[in-house]
Each structure stands twice: as structure tokens, then as C-alpha cells.
Length: 116
Image 1 (cartoon, helix red, strand yellow):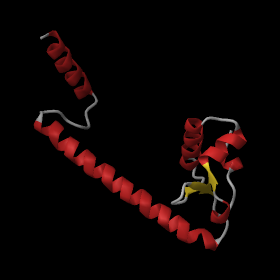
Image 2 (cartoon, rainbow, N blue to C red):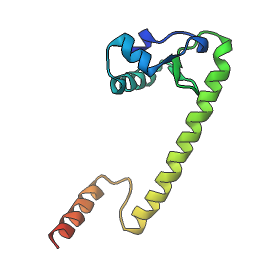
Image 3 (cartoon, rainbow, N blue to C red):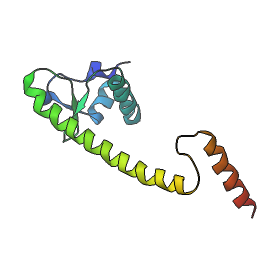
Image 4 (cartoon, rainbow, N blue to C red):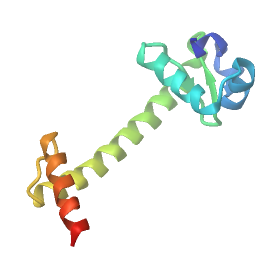
């Protein structure tokens, strides 16, 4: 199922997740997953500031596309800032944030603490 089949073209026709759920017959959680899947496939599903979703129709939609881009960019920077702080903490603890094997070290440390 492609949720984009239920999403209208043009920002004036934007539709809420609740309405998408009602029309498609799937849960809100599934709607979010389907939107992400479509976006991951390159379908530009855009959400407006007031929570509606739409697909690009024409140049009148560009201001909403730009606003969406700027919101997502700000969210990305916020996530990166949080990661930077956590990364620094891991490095101070002697763990490499990029090494999967360090997860095993952490689990061993937690296991030894639980036994104490």
C-alpha cells in the first residue's frame, strides 16, 4: 500500500494523518510508517505547519516545500547536537561511538553492576 495514493496534490488540499487513517483504514502509527516509506522512495510527501500532508502540484507549493525543508534541517541540527554530546560522553568512557562491539562492552558492564 502506498499512502501517497491517499494524499492530495497541492498544499491547499493538505490532509491530516487522522483523515488519512480514516480513509485508508490503517492506524496512525502505520500512516507514519507508510509516509516514511514513501519519502524513503523519493516521493516528496510534505507536511504543513498545521499538520496536513500533501504532494507537490505546482509552483504555488514551493513556499510550503521551503518551510518544510527548513523545519527538517533545524530538526537535523538539533539531533546532531544531541549526538555530539553523547559521543563525547562515550569517548570519555573509553568507548568508540562507531564500534558495534562496544555495545557488548556496555552490556557486560551493566551485567556486572546488576550482580553487585
